[in-house]
Amino acid sequence: MSNFALIGAAGFIAPRHMKAIAETGHQLLAVTDPHDAVGVIDQYFPQARYFPEIERFDRFLEKQRRLPPEQHVHYVSICSPNYLHDAHVRLALRVRAHAICEKPLVINPWNLDQLADIEQETGRRVFNVLQLRMHPAVIDLRRRLQTSPPSGRTAIDLAYITRRGAWYQVSWKGDEARSGGLVTNIGIHFFDMLMWLFGPAQAAVVHHRAADRVAGCLELERAKVRWFLSINAEDLPAEAQAAGRHAWRQLTFDGQVFEFSEGFTDLHTLVYRDILAGGGFGIEDARPSISLVHQLRTCDVSAASREDGHPLLFR
Image 1 (cartoon, rainbow, N blue to C red):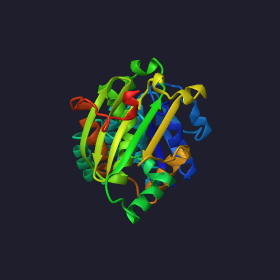
Image 2: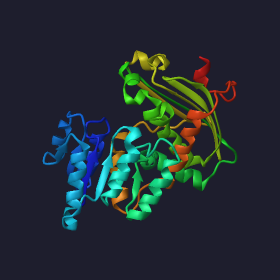
Image 3: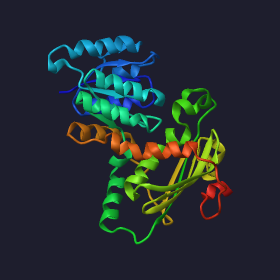
């Protein structure tokens, strides 16, 4: 049995990590979060130690490191805000634990190099949660593409609209320096998946960039992707609004809808099983999408044509 610790226990995604640790038969020894709304721990590991201050959590990890190997913290799961991921991965490696970190692994791509150096120095691994690569429908599509590759570039339209209230822009998520903006906080999931399926990005343009909406076009090795991301409820299609839905996702390949809406809640358990079995996605797996979203954040905005712009830009 492996021992885990977790950073960011009060956040939205932390329960999926706790569930994954429980379902894979391992133990959560300690959690930390400056916010004490961490009662979800009771559903999985009521005996886990809770530290409001990360300094005391750090001291606990160091203490465990000096005990017999079966009492070491073997993995640290990182569910903290994006801008803290880099520091928290370093903490995990320093106490000789493997790091399992939510996306994005870092906000800026140049920080990956030093993490790779520390990984080599400590002999511990850094794993990134790239959970869409574990989705059965995505795996099946990748297998089909490898078996029967398309003759030309696949035409892809990606739209993801998820309503967020006024709180979003006030929180760290609305601060681009701390979250990386919409392309990092939301888009990176889909960009990583599409590059995994269709190869690396060869060109990228942004047609619209605002705090609540961003859109552009990617040319991948084997696909052209028109994409649109929004947290503005006004962008939801009329049918979604009429049904009272707060999110809408659409991905089409050459006009055919690709359906992968189901099965999202169990993907973290699949990620953990893969890591614990000797697999997992590391720093170099994460690098292409982190480099891409950095480019999308910093490039100039270009005018969209009907051919290259996502259709939702012209509604």
